[in-house]
Amino acid sequence: MKLNLHHLRLFHAVATADSLTAAAQALNLSQSALSTQLRQLEGRLGSALFERRGRKLHLTEAGRIALDHAETIFRTAEDLTATLTQSTRRQQPLRVGALATLSRNFQIQFLRPLLGDPERQVQLRSGSQDELLEALEALELDVVLTNQPPPPAGPQPWLVETLAEQAISLIGKTPIESERPLDLKLILKDQPLIVPSERSVLRSGLDALLVKLGVRPRIVAEADDMAMLRLLAREDAGLAVLPPIVVQDELAQGLLHEVAQLPNLRESFYAVTRTRRFPHPLLATVLQEGQGAPDA
Image (cartoon, rainbow, N blue to C red; front, side):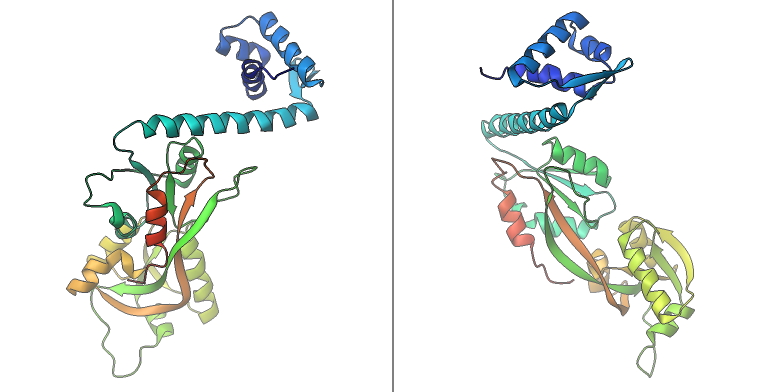
């Protein structure tokens, strides 16, 4: 007997709700009607999907398997609907999510293959890593740009491509004059530093380098936003720990200077996507041209 997808959606509602009562209210059904249709689904599958413990329903092993399959079926249906709905439009925008603290210069570099062509539209959205990955999973975004490796996504892992790696340097308002080769250890010890926040991957690498060199730095400012690190460097608050791409315009104009490069310290930029039956036609273009970008 064929599986009734309507019953499967009712089962999913109950499995993800706090109770049968809450699910029935959300579905605008009586509890008895909902229970009857769940029993019909269990009859078709030949296994009990729930077991009652006190006043609550809990998934059986068969119920957990059924829930995994149901979510896969619904994601596929959403993918199909989102893609085919958009394909009927004259222009299909590429929906790009970017970590709120990510370098704007890098974002422009990634999007450059699409800019200037009126037939190629782009929708940009910024947010936290969790917000963007949730939107990607819900098919509200086509790709997420980040400098933080995403966690595994359960049964359907993220597709992660490394687009570029940037060396990390000390960036300052004024170059340091010296008749001898600059002593990095001495610079890190004596100069005021503007550093990424402790929550960042970049800060972890910096802290490891400082421990290795035996340096106790003089930190005058911390920020989790690359744009703020750039502005603090322009205000001559100290030497900022940054990938040069963030301040490429200031370096070219002589407004800021690369004082020293930090050894073995690099920042990676990632494009995160998910498996789709109908990927956006422009996605392959920007991913191919965005990979292996040279250091700024």
